[in-house]
Image 1 (cartoon, rainbow, N blue to C red):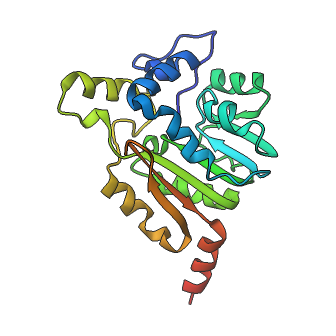
Image 2 (spheres, rainbow, N blue to C red):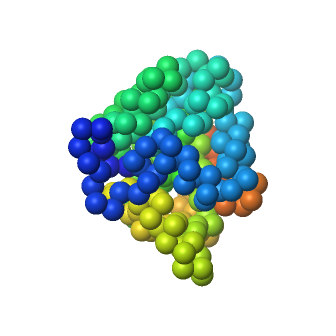
Length: 224
């Protein structure tokens, strides 16, 4: 999730192009994902049952809503700390709120709660955000996270793009990344709640779909 930016004050030093504007976000994401950029959005959208309410955390400028969810869900709410992205979502007709996930505010309740390519920002405490998502979701939690990162490329120019292209300019954890093994370890305690897990075309992101009701039943069964 990006640091708070608006048109009235300059971006903090170090903030990447991704978080300065919707156009910059799209440009960097297309470079990072290449011809599979569209597939990464479809892979997540396909996991959202029609007619449900959706809360998307760290939605950026709203590409998932604009391209796939606007006419498919009953209610969509995007929650981002970046006021520019929040304003754009509202212009698109979505509900949108300015929310810092590191703060104490409770998450809005929805049938489906989504986060795509942002969980690494909350390392080393990503499980706290995941637990908050499970608490807010009635039916599904969808996590899609990069597991092949340009920031770890052996090609210096590509590694620099991966680091700078996803640097939110102050959010703790942005220099840490998941590989597939690390993401699998994070998700292992939720095996009983996992509906499906798969990699997107191109293998750059892995998607986990969790049923929060299963998670709650599993914990109840484990209680002495």
